[in-house]
Image 1 (tube, rainbow, N blue to C red):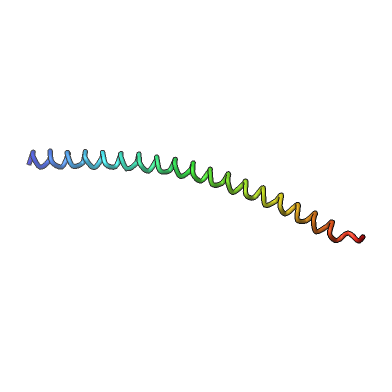
Image 2 (image 1 turned 60 degrees about the horizontal axis):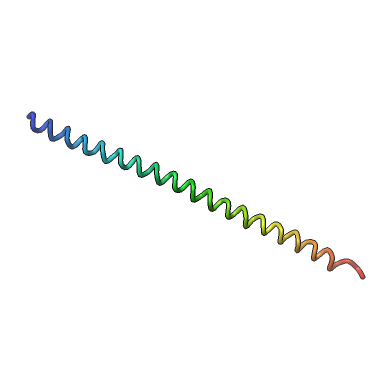
Length: 69
Protein backbone atom coordinates (compact mmCIF):
# COMPACT_ATOMS: atom_id res chain seq x y z
CA UNK A 1 0.00 0.00 0.00
CA UNK A 2 2.84 2.35 0.85
CA UNK A 3 4.45 1.76 -2.54
CA UNK A 4 1.19 2.58 -4.25
CA UNK A 5 0.96 5.88 -2.38
CA UNK A 6 4.56 6.74 -3.29
CA UNK A 7 3.85 5.94 -6.94
CA UNK A 8 0.73 8.09 -6.93
CA UNK A 9 2.56 10.98 -5.26
CA UNK A 10 5.34 10.71 -7.82
CA UNK A 11 2.83 10.81 -10.66
CA UNK A 12 1.07 13.79 -9.09
CA UNK A 13 4.41 15.62 -8.82
CA UNK A 14 5.16 14.81 -12.44
CA UNK A 15 1.76 16.10 -13.55
CA UNK A 16 2.20 19.23 -11.47
CA UNK A 17 5.54 19.87 -13.16
CA UNK A 18 3.99 19.36 -16.60
CA UNK A 19 1.12 21.72 -15.77
CA UNK A 20 3.57 24.38 -14.58
CA UNK A 21 5.56 23.97 -17.80
CA UNK A 22 2.38 24.25 -19.86
CA UNK A 23 1.34 27.41 -17.99
CA UNK A 24 4.75 28.93 -18.70
CA UNK A 25 4.48 28.08 -22.39
CA UNK A 26 0.96 29.53 -22.62
CA UNK A 27 2.12 32.72 -20.92
CA UNK A 28 5.04 33.01 -23.33
CA UNK A 29 2.75 32.43 -26.30
CA UNK A 30 0.35 35.08 -25.01
CA UNK A 31 3.19 37.61 -24.76
CA UNK A 32 4.40 36.79 -28.28
CA UNK A 33 0.89 37.10 -29.71
CA UNK A 34 0.34 40.47 -28.04
CA UNK A 35 3.63 41.75 -29.47
CA UNK A 36 2.87 40.42 -32.96
CA UNK A 37 -0.66 41.85 -32.98
CA UNK A 38 0.73 45.18 -31.83
CA UNK A 39 3.16 45.14 -34.74
CA UNK A 40 0.38 44.24 -37.18
CA UNK A 41 -1.82 47.03 -35.81
CA UNK A 42 0.99 49.56 -36.32
CA UNK A 43 1.41 48.43 -39.91
CA UNK A 44 -2.33 48.62 -40.54
CA UNK A 45 -2.42 52.11 -39.02
CA UNK A 46 0.37 53.13 -41.40
CA UNK A 47 -1.48 51.72 -44.38
CA UNK A 48 -4.68 53.47 -43.28
CA UNK A 49 -2.78 56.77 -42.98
CA UNK A 50 -1.34 56.39 -46.49
CA UNK A 51 -4.78 55.54 -47.91
CA UNK A 52 -6.24 58.67 -46.31
CA UNK A 53 -3.49 60.76 -47.93
CA UNK A 54 -4.21 59.18 -51.32
CA UNK A 55 -7.94 59.81 -50.92
CA UNK A 56 -7.25 63.46 -50.08
CA UNK A 57 -5.07 63.87 -53.17
CA UNK A 58 -7.70 62.16 -55.33
CA UNK A 59 -10.45 64.45 -54.01
CA UNK A 60 -8.40 67.56 -54.77
CA UNK A 61 -7.53 66.23 -58.22
CA UNK A 62 -11.22 65.73 -59.01
CA UNK A 63 -12.05 69.18 -57.65
CA UNK A 64 -9.45 70.91 -59.82
CA UNK A 65 -10.44 68.87 -62.86
CA UNK A 66 -14.05 70.10 -62.56
CA UNK A 67 -13.19 73.81 -62.33
CA UNK A 68 -14.56 75.53 -65.46
CA UNK A 69 -11.91 77.14 -67.62
